[in-house]
Length: 353
Image 1: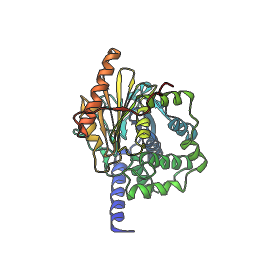
Image 2 (image 1 turned 45 degrees about the vertical axis):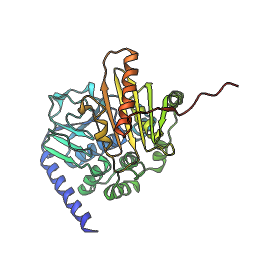
Image 3 (image 1 turned 90 degrees about the vertical axis):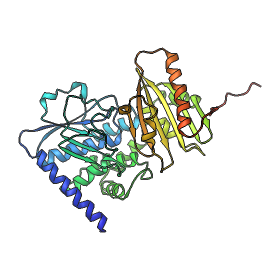
Image 4 (image 1 turned 90 degrees about the horizontal axis):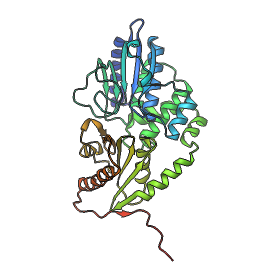
């Protein structure tokens, strides 16, 4: 074990001791709030924190989320691993003594915790936001996933990690870091193999390769028809989407196009325009760039190579959505250093015989 690993272990133990001071109280109930439309990292981290809190402190715990879960992999994850979740609209806050925010932060704009509700426990791997306050705060932007920090706390607590939880945490790191290839460090790798050896390979395979609905392929076709390319940039304004998650999924897919280093997608969900940005340039800061596309910075954020945001458009005509999308295409290109851009269709219509 090298000095760096020993130092990190000492920090984790210190964090666990701080958590002990917060949670070792009698008759306490904890509410864990995930970010809206939770991804595998948020889902697994919530699952892991619930297990840690209940086993170590005998504290009653619930996991809540806003928005929806619709991506096939995420639905398969929740169902096959039996992750207990509650929609935040059904939560009675007076029934809980403490609130935890996981994979998000107060004022981030992507969680449904009311602004008048305090945060006692905060664990996240996104950049620290101004005004962040919590009785226990563990924010580490240099790790690839929040699940990594949860695994470290579980290991330090010397609790056995059940198979379903290990499967969830392994998939979370795999998904968040794209098989340890995106913004992963030694801690992520170590955490991943800690739980991978305990995971169910059958369930992991079912989550990674779920059956896809007919509507998914219809939306995929719609996305490809709306996709435009300029040099190393690819952009798609998908139009109406059934859930916010699909926008990020399509941005990931388009980034795989040969010679493309930046992808940018939008989708219309209810009264909002959902934004997703991806890049293969590890020296970039997509989280900083996307804030320049969103009027209210609290509604945008991310990491170096991937980011997302929301533009609240309210009740507007279809043409206003289209105008906003066109403006975003040009702003995106300008951020990349191009003043004048002629976007070309990814898939040109067939020529008449």
